[in-house]
Length: 71
Image (cartoon, rainbow, N blue to C red; front, side):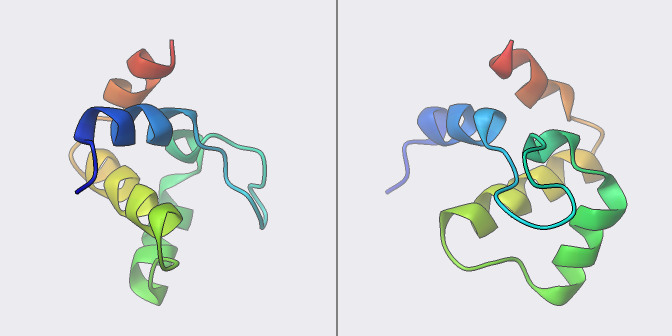
């Protein structure tokens, strides 16, 4: 089972590892790009889970949660 607190911390500090937005914090990747991935299918594994969380946070206007964790 994923430790939810640690998963939030990891997601807050995760940077996009590839593509147009490589090196950008996931929460700072433009919404249209995250939505594109949502429609295409998020990558498998932890990165995909993190991107799905970012999608849900952006969808609900809660991006600041991860930005506050990151400090």
